[in-house]
Length: 208
Image 1 (cartoon, rainbow, N blue to C red):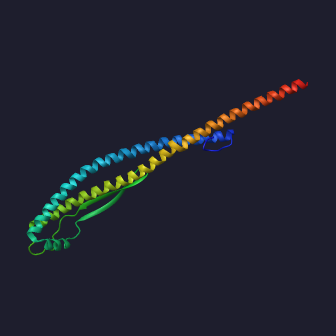
Image 2: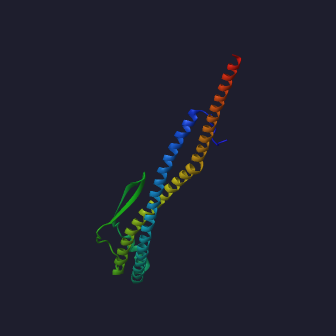
């Protein structure tokens, strides 16, 4: 017996065929979507490797500049100076669509540096550290954009994979088995009906 229990009628067979046709169509579409998402994830992973390398270099330069400034000014004076700095960037968030998904895109643009309050004893090393931090911030926004996209795409890819597996390993095999069973039962019932008709006709002939 199949996993799906349906009466062995032609309407049941027709419904099973329709369900299977719809399932196969959905399976093909999900497979295409899975391939597109997988390619996009791989592409973004390759892109983020490059960004990580750039970010690592930017952090090393920033750390070196901060260390030099701390040596020149002292860490307390440097921390106090950083509190006097005003925001030097604009952050814009936009969304792009891919396969029905909304992917955030962060655009960070730096403001032109303006004069700000400075503490006595502020050195050029402090300005260098500030400039390096601005450069690192731009790369960080780019990194955050791609990383968030990878997370969203990976979650959607996992959902699609579960649906593909459910269709491939459960829904389609069960309905194929049910269709075969119903078709065989209909053929068997038709043969029985033909045999019964022949038997009735034979007995009618004998009585005459």
